[in-house]
Length: 266
Ligand SMILES: [Zn+2]
Image (cartoon, rainbow, N blue to C red; front, top):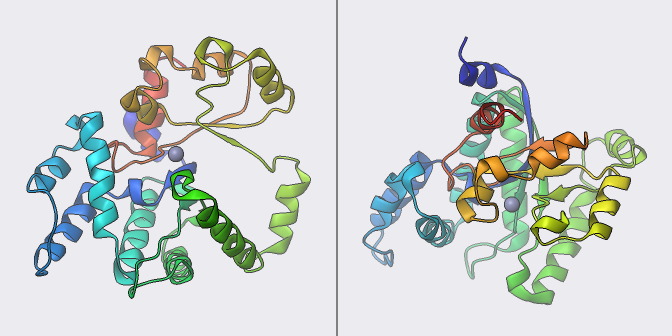
C-alpha cells in the first residue's frame, strides 16, 4: 500500500479547520455559478480562473479566494450547504472527529449572527446523523472587526454553550486540564520570533499545538517544510496535532498533511 493510501485509511482527528477556508473548489464553483445567475454580480472576472488554479495558487490568489468566499457566503441557504459539503468531505477523508471553527457573520436583511450559528449547528446535526463523524463547532473572533464585534460573539458563544449535547463529555475534557490549545505555534521558539519564557510555558504545561504545515509554508510563516518547527516539538516529545487550517484555499486534505509529515521524515 502506498503512503498516501495508508494516510487516507487512517482514522483521523482534525482540530484546526476554518469552515470558509475549507470549502473545496467544487463547492466554490457551484456557489459562483449560482451567484452569476443573479443580476447584481460584483465579482472580479478572474474569479473562476483563480478558483480553478487549485494547488498552483499563489499566496496573493489564496487571499483573493477569501475575498470571493466572503462575497459568496451571504445567505443562510448557502451557509447550510457549505457546512454540509465540508463535513462530508472531511468524513470521506476518514476524519472521525472534526472541530470546525467559524466567525459568525451577519448580512443586513439576510441573516443575523445568531441565524448563522443556528444554521451551522443544524447542518452539523444533520451530517452527524448520516456520516460516521463527530463534529463540534468553535466560534472564532476576527480581530480586525474590533472589540464590540468580538464581545458580541463571546456573548453568543456563552449562550450556545448551554446547548452542548453532552455535559459529561464537556466535564471530562475540563478535568483533563487540557482546556487550552495553541493554533499554529509559529512564533513560540526563540529562533522564530518567540522567547525562552514562552517556550518554557508551552512545554511546561504541555499545551498541545495545532500544526498546519501547508498553510504555514504557503503563507510564508515558515520558509519550507524541512524548517518547520514540527521537528522541534517532535524531538521534545511535545503533543502536536496535524491539521489543515483551510483545506480548500490551500488545496490540501488531512490525509495529504499526514503524508507530507511522513515524507519529510518527521
Ligand atoms: Zn487557522
